[in-house]
Length: 357
Image 1 (cartoon, rainbow, N blue to C red):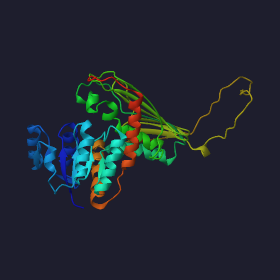
Image 2 (cartoon, rainbow, N blue to C red):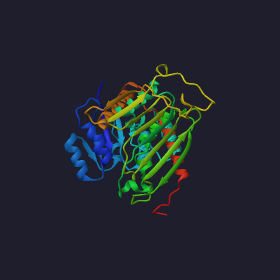
Image 3 (tube, one colour):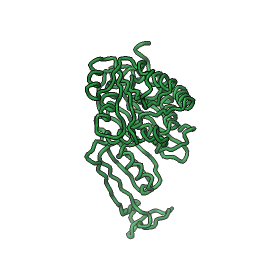
Image 4 (tube, helix red, strand yellow):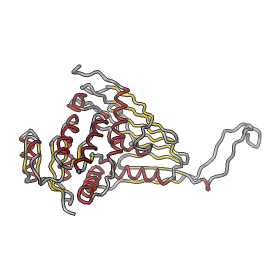
């Protein structure tokens, strides 16, 4: 399979430190043929890195016919309008998250890609992370029993004052970080993509210097599904887990690099049954329900390679196969649309004042 010829729009933290950083590594996925950024220092650096063409305005790419894929790493509020411009002109597009602020806009992009016969994908790279895949495989194996609750925390303690703290730029923790844990949360609750779970959200502005939220708690529920809680907080000074899962036969706690889980097998336990009588010891003293369960404990440690770099590489291999061989997307756009609807509902529940009001 040949390499994709890629044009990257934007050389900020995402365009430079994620996408370009991966494409500079030895790999068989893509070659960068063009980079766009309004800052000359950034385009000159890209030209030195890739020997590629450079532009200050993304519209200069419209007349090129040698580009397999546009990587849209513009400001968050520009993701959708820029994506629509390239889809309209027949380009395949990978857009950074958030793909859209409103679900109706993403629906428009999906329809336009279908109309033009091109590919649209969203950079949901954390779906490919080895730590998430390990947690999901443990849950799906059934060893923890019926899952009662899933807690996902992408939190820490930080103060922030850049453009990603501004609502007018599409900033805030839920748009900046939220698409990753929300994508995973929706896989754990697993309701059909044309349906919505019940959503409760609480947002706050704690340590931010902008007008967007930097504290987010989202609770998702649905009939016969586990409760799923997502925390994306910038005021959590004791964030010691990424995943914490409760099940009827065990539980799990893990980070990006270390996962531990314990469980027991029913056939290895003493049979129990409900007693309506007062529990007593042989000498008649009252006692509490107590038993020693035959716990089995396991652990997983991530490999030395950065889980982030590994996930980005796996994402782009899927995109390569999707564009060149029509392989299905690992993260279908219908799932992204469901996520955008949930995030939109979270913002509807938490209207925040704006600096530009």
